[in-house]
Image (cartoon, rainbow, N blue to C red; front, side, top):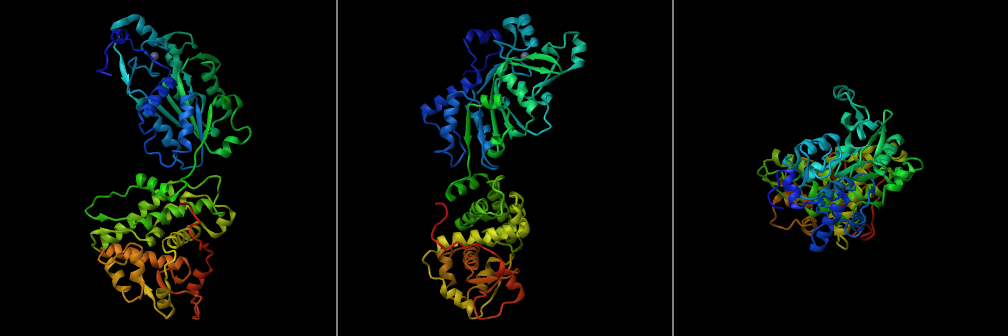
Length: 497
Ligand SMILES: [Zn+2]
C-alpha cells in the first residue's frame, strides 16, 4: 500500500474494500502459504502437529480454542495471529470500537460521516491495536467484557438509555475488527459466556435490562486446560458450539526442540565483558529436568510442567556461573551441571505436587529430578565408555572437596591427580588446551554423572567420595544421601530423541 489515504473521499475513490477480520486473516494466510513464507515464527516443534490444525481452522474462518497445559506456547500462538492481519486498516479517528469509515456501527460515527462526508479525516490502525487479550477469572463481569450503560453520558445527552451513545465499551467491542483472545475460558462465569455468545450470534446483548445491539466483527480465540474444558458444565453448550476447532497443544517432544525453545526464550546474553560458553550437556540436563518432572508421579500432571521451568532454570544457571566467575575474576563464564542446583528457587515454583511429593518436599523432589536428569544425560553421552579407573580412585579412599564457588583453576588443579578423569572430561568436550572454565565444567559433569549413577557419592558440601557400596562405613550425612530415592535410568537412550 502506498502512503496512507487522508480522507473518507480518498478512501472511497481508491476503491478500498474492507473485509470481515476472519476473511482478512484467511487471505493473508493463503498468500503466505503460496509464497512459502514461515507461518508462525518462533513457534518450535509444532510443525507437524499444531500448525496444520491451526492453518485449517483459519482457512475455515473458525473461532478456535487451544487446549493445553501451562507453558505450551498457547498465548504466543494467539499473539502470533496478528502477523496475519493487514499492515493497516482505515478507521474513524477516535472511535473506541475502530469503526470502518465506509460502514460505521456506532451512532457517533454515523452522525460524523453524515455531517462531514468525504472531507472526514480517516486514521489507520496497525495490527498491535487490533489484538485484545483477557485472562478469564470468575469475577469478570458483563461490564468488563461487553460494556456498561454510562448514566452520566446518558443524562448529558438526554437520550434514551438503549442508544449506544450511552455505552461505555468493554473489551469485546474494543476488539471490533480485530482478534479477541480469552485465556482460561472455563474460568468465565456461565452468565458471561451467555453474553459473549449472544453478541457473537445475534449481535445483541442485554445490559442492566436494556437491549444493546452491536454488530461486531471479531475473531474469537480461546485457551483452556483440557480437563477444565471437557469437564461437564464448565462451558455453556451454545458457546462451545460456536467454537469451530479445538486444537491440542503439547510440550516439546524431543530434547532437541526443547533446547531450541529455551535457547530462543532464555536471557543468557548478558554482555558484561565476559565470554559465555554453555556446554551442550548443561542445556540437555536442564531440559531433561523438565521431561522427567512431566513424567514424575510425585508431580501433578493436570497442571503440567511449563516450558518456563527450563527457561528460568537456564537463566539462574548462567547467573550462578556468572557470579562465580565474577568473584574469581574469570573472563570466561562456563556453567556447570552443579549450577543447576542453584536454580532450585526457579524449579520448585514450576510444579504442583501430588501427596507423595508433598511428603518428600518440593526442594527434595527438585534435587532428585536434577540428579536423575544428570544421570540420564551422562548415561547417554558415556554409553560404552569405561569409567572404572576414576571410580577406583575414589574406592581407594580418594576424596575431592569441591564447592559451588571453586574457581576453574582450583577445580582443574584439585582434580589433576584423579587418574582417568581428564580422559572422561575430554569425552564430554573438555579437550586438553580448552579454557580452564570449559575443562572445569566437563570435569564437574563427569563427577555429577558418576554421582547420579551412584558409583561415587557426594555430601552436601559437594565433596566427592567413594560410593557407599564399598567396604567403608558411611558417615551419617552420606547415609542420608544414599537413602535418597533417585531413579537412575541405566538403559540406553530410553528418553526422547
Ligand atoms: Zn464509531
